[in-house]
Length: 410
Image (cartoon, rainbow, N blue to C red; front, side, top):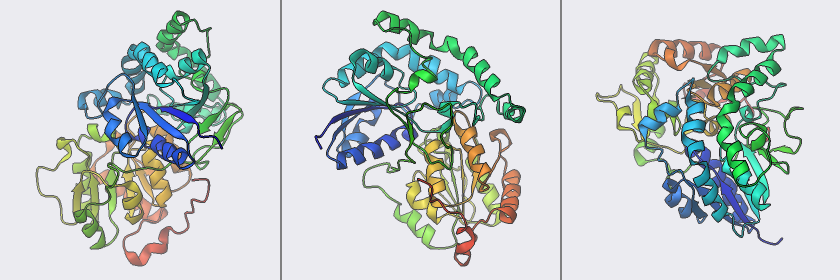
């Protein structure tokens, strides 16, 4: 095998970066040279893994809490990302990515790196596109729960999924006017709708999730391959559980783990206060993964048996949990599925409500709307889950969840 120079471009939070670090490490192990092109913020993390790095504008920080609050808005978050964050910098992204692609043999793109398809089509570089969740296909045959209007899912049994998708695409067509104008400027012919069909490579599309969440459908691109999840979850290369957290896990029954991933955690509101109160009501141990936002830290002592930590690798803490409460991001959902633990979803925006609905259909999860997340509601949900979905309360009940097998392409 002749080693290739592979350029991977992505944009977003750690949930949008980690799968591509995993992919890069796998490609490196096969002898290829890999560069990730993304926001400058991630340069140290990527280079610490021995992966090449190239900066791509816009230069945005995931620590920008005001920006993340807009991005995580249930109704307008996805529109804000596309129209206010990505498309105003399309020319910059295209110029940076064109430079990064010089000498590369293959370009791999993330769903919202809209400059990627333009670079591929202009330069002729071989191109593979990826998606991280089934919602990116917006299938008529496997319809999605849409964050701005989840109630539309009630109409799907009436055979209206195709009509709803068509109306949605029509309403969003104006969003991608900047791409169409830029295509003309750089001498490219009109292409497929950039936000939908245009994000997919005609050569190969990698669906980087498990078939537990979505199986190939007739209206998926015919060249799609479902790969399973790509796992990577280190905040820093050598970082694992802190000694304090490890001692806590060793000192008693498996706790409930409460987390909001890497984006929603910056707009947590009172999620952690309500979570701690619910754990106290339940008489259960709990771990609160509160991130770097100081607003998430408790201003008063936590209840007995509850501990807070900025971060812990999900691959190390989820398997030691009794249950997991989380926002439903693709990466968090993947790690929770992998652990085999029951889940309670609190979706915020984007793909999260759809990911939640898909796991709920597996019979291993429940959901609370973000606006209804209160301690008593959480406690009531755990009462239901204890009756209908096995939730571990002690080491002697470790077989309670053995019925849930994740042998499907994870």
